[in-house]
Structure formats: structure tokens, C-alpha cells
Image (cartoon, rainbow, N blue to C red; front, side, top):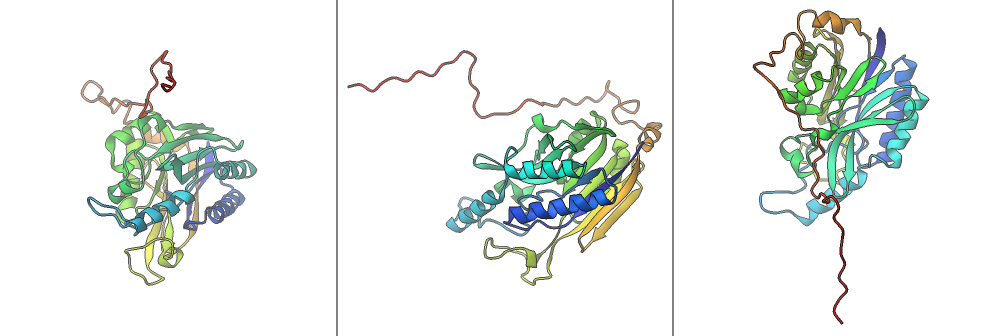
Length: 320
């Protein structure tokens, strides 16, 4: 069984969510014209990855300027049940695509770095919230939990996302391999040369196809009047240089990496290569040693408030 997969390398239109949605729809249309059935967008594509921003924060204090910048970022985020995701789902249906797209998800007063899965019938198949924001990302994003680790079904096997440096969490990878993920999506903001070797390692370790998408973002595309940026001010300064790629289950790079330009990468994937690769290595099968190593994964939602069973709310009228 074969399919054509695509990964999109381009930038968010920062603080302009409608323009970013239009860019996504254009890339989906182009991927479909090239025969793709699956497309992966970068981490935080809808809502933006504000590379170089610091929200004016320092230990023990925040500033009014930083709060205003966060409010602008919060306003550019989207909700899972909002019109923006519905618009992308309709585009997925129009182009008969399975889509994995990185978003900044707004849930109350908290933002999450999330990957959303869309199907060719225009449905939201699921989502994954990044478990562990890296370094200063923790000032703007909340922590996901194990309830969103579930991969989704496609005609070619399971599709799931592991976001950026979650890919360096061995237990996280094993939780995905246990689900028999065939299409392992790795939306990222890591544009270093070392990322490609990590993607090759994961493809070989999981005996799966790895689809990694990173943004290509330059300083001229970062609106300085909306948010302070600590990186050099020259318009051609590259904030994220890309490096998107597609890798086979035996570590062969099928497309990319591409740097310093926008790109839409495609490759034909032969799903038979998964079984061929598992002939001598199956990390959760014949090459596992559950008598020595076991992994427990908590998939329960973690909520701040739980209503006790049978509890009622009693309102006492004020004394006269």
C-alpha cells in the first residue's frame, strides 16, 4: 500500500490568524494537486511561534508591557471548537486530506501548543497538547497531559504527533510506538542540523515514517510594533530556517531537509517498508523485554477541580 505525504515549510503570518488560515488552505490545495493524501504543518503554525520574544519577564516580576504582549498573543490563538479549526476541517474535506496542524490553543486563560488532526470528511479526529514546553516556552504555554496521547486512524495505519522536543522524551516515543503509529508527525521549531539525525533515529527506532515540518521565518515577518524581539534587527535575520523532512522506517531521507526558503515537500511512502523494517526490530514487540522494562502511561485527564459524585451546591440566603 502506498500514499503520498506532504510537509509544509512556511511561516505564520504573526498576529493575523485569518491570513495564516488562508496560507494553510493554499498549501493544502497545492499538496492535493501533487497527489498528497496527508499533510503536516509546523509547530504553532496557527497562532505563531514568537521566536526571540521574552514577554519582558524576569525572575520575581512581570511588566505591564509583557502582559500586553501576551494578551496580543492570546488573541491570535484559537479554540478547538472555534470557527478557525472548522474552516481548516472544511478545507481538508475539499481536498480529501488528512491534516496534522500545529496550533496555539486557547482554553480559558491558558494557551497550549497543540497538534490537531483533521480528516477528509471535514471532521476533527483528535488533538495532542504538548506535554512539556521547553525552557522559556513555559511562560506562555501550559502543560498537556496523557489524555491527548491517542493517535488516530487512517487508511494507512495510525497517525500521531510528537511535538518538537517531546521527541527527546524516550517514554513519550514508546507510548506512540505502542499504538503502532505508522505516520509519526514531528511538527517542530528546531531548525538545527542535529534535528535530521534525530528524525532518522526515530524512524529507525519506531520503524515508522517520520514527517517533520518546521517554519521558515525571517525577522521582517515579525511585527516589532506588536511584540519585542531580542534577536538581531536586520530584516533578513533568519529566526527559523526550516529543515523539514520525510524519513522512511529504515532511516532513508525521502525528502528534504530544505533550509532558508519556503517549501512544500512530498514523497511517496510504501507502507510495506514498515513490516520489512520490523523483521529485525520491533521496539514494542519481539525486541522488547517487558520482563525487564515496562512503561506505565497515565491517560486520565488532569483537572484542577473535580466535582464529587452526588455533591450538590447549597446557596444560603443572606441573613435579614
